[in-house]
Image (cartoon, rainbow, N blue to C red; front, side):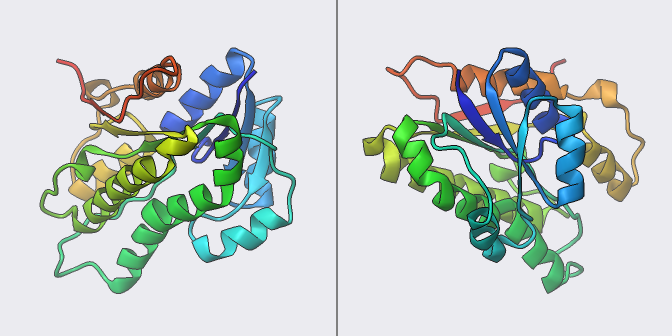
Length: 229
């Protein structure tokens, strides 16, 4: 039985991959921003454990995790949570930039740092759910794209540093996916949202599991997933 810690399990891609891993009998630890959210996750995903830590405040994660029980080893750490706020460079405030970078880049880096001993012990796998915005930046997407470009650099550096310890690292770049975040993006764009046009969270979860389940003699480093036609 493998052990996984997942961020963003409350909705979208995170919820889909959590359900898939639970259904196959793996041990799940879900990161929640507060105690109330942790209770909701435990009730929704029976059998899963929770860890409380706010990705919006990465500088407090070390203290928060230090007060709680954690798994002794991790077969995977899956960074799925993220935030988005659209706007032109001439419009976005420093506060939005800092919030975006904190949740999408600094928190994954810090959480990975804190859990590296468990990952090394298990020769585990770090999976970053990135975005098509991590490969190209479009108008109105500067802050989000910058955070995701940074996440790609984090993954590449981590892979080079930890390969000798047996830790695998994969970045997955989904295109538009039918999630609550995508619904918010459509509102910000002033467009009607039609979930049927986009990739389902379960399809992205399948991509994550494909990378995770690859035999030890191979490593998927980057996977791009686009809506089908």
